[in-house]
Image (cartoon, rainbow, N blue to C red; front, side):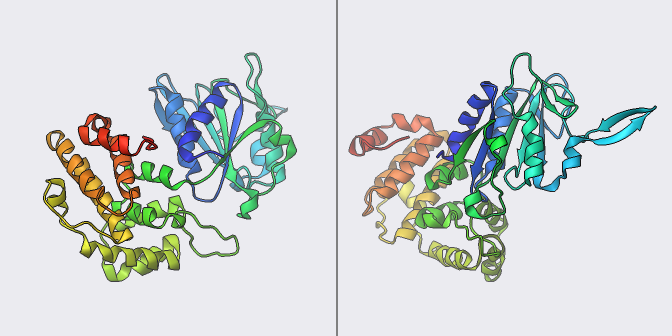
Length: 355
């Protein structure tokens, strides 16, 4: 089982070995985003062109197929007669030349007939071998990645055909709160959403196949964050957010937000003034994330000063988990903070800290 942050490297190595990887994971954990990140990695400085089937020099194509939307004939080719000769017309978005990545998403949700057709393309890429789909030949500069939901989640996924499984490398990916937090802090997710997930980690992902209402997932929390950052009226928020994460989580999240009125003076903390330490867990996480934002927005001149004062204050909290969360997040974002005296002393006290 892999964390989402580990899978980009795993997929890249499998592709370099000439094989086809398949990401299997729960609904909404970010499989598509991972594959797009792989395309950026493989492009190696080239411009990634979404939907481009014949990229020019300096370009790298990326084509996304949602297989659950296709019929067998779409992929096998539509027969037609040209001047008495029988030919086949293939989908216009199949690669024609150049180099790129073809992403067959929802592979597990596709019927057996589609899996069987795609299976023709999944043999290892050899130096003198060509991957074929009937009469169609995939240009040698193109690689393939598959993705799908787990059959065990009962999310509409079918069992993978043995024919396909025998030709691919399956990568099981699982959501991870720490992993998601690192990603969220560097991708514009609201600090209030991050603090809530830290306070309530079980809320990051819940899935019940029998429940057709919205349910929380890494993807749905990002959607909620995007809406929340537009500052909707507070009296509408709980009902709005139900559409992303469901009624229960929406109520819990909006209740959590009311703690913000009780935050201490954060500017006093980062400038080293004496401020009473918090005891409430939810408020402590809100303070940590808010302090992270202040340190991040500080000038290069002030950042170390703010960081050291914030860390000293957070360390006074009843549990070390808050200081570890703050320190780890900050030094991952700003490596120069690892050279500060306060962090060096902190790491000695917490020798199991990984950054």
